[in-house]
Image 1 (tube, rainbow, N blue to C red):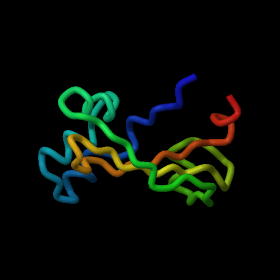
Image 2 (cartoon, rainbow, N blue to C red):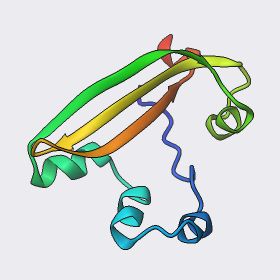
Image 3 (cartoon, rainbow, N blue to C red):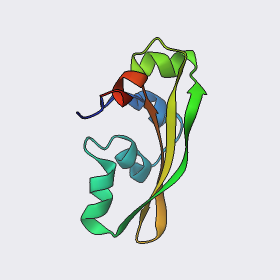
Image 4 (tube, rainbow, N blue to C red):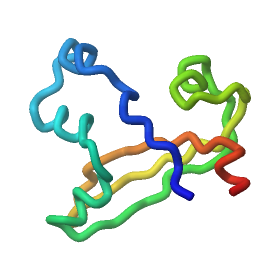
Length: 99
């Protein structure tokens, strides 16, 4: 089973308003796996920053589509050729962990 991928987690007008550049937008709107994108051209490493149960705010629950107040939140750093490229956060609903 693969986790639900949320492709509309951020909307383009907001990103443009915040003053992002072309490189940042390319990463934010990557339609495929960011890990695979890094692996195509670089040696890849992942560092687990944290993984624990947290209380979710209204927006996180709405984006993920869950009603529970707590969920596992995992934060990672993705490296390409030893350089940190991405800091990522995943919300893992309990029902995902049970499968």
